[in-house]
Image (cartoon, rainbow, N blue to C red):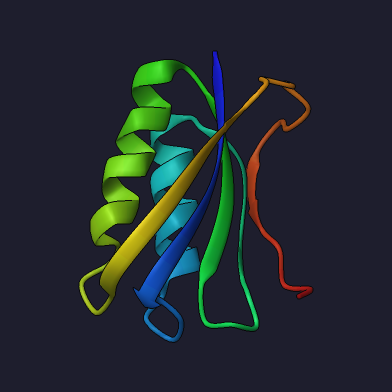
Length: 92
């Protein structure tokens, strides 16, 4: 099992990035959360099987159709297993 903490830069707000990340994460059975940051980036945590977390990372590099990703920072973290679902956090 694996946990990553990512930050995605570019045109990633106002393009349904969080909603599509939620849909994708639930589809591939990855737990965690996603949120917008005040600086225009999107932040997310993914937990799950290695191959499914890799799938989410690859998806984040492109994002939804209207997104334009210019960068992604990926930080490996110890797997905690403290998420039972995937959700959108709205508080900044």
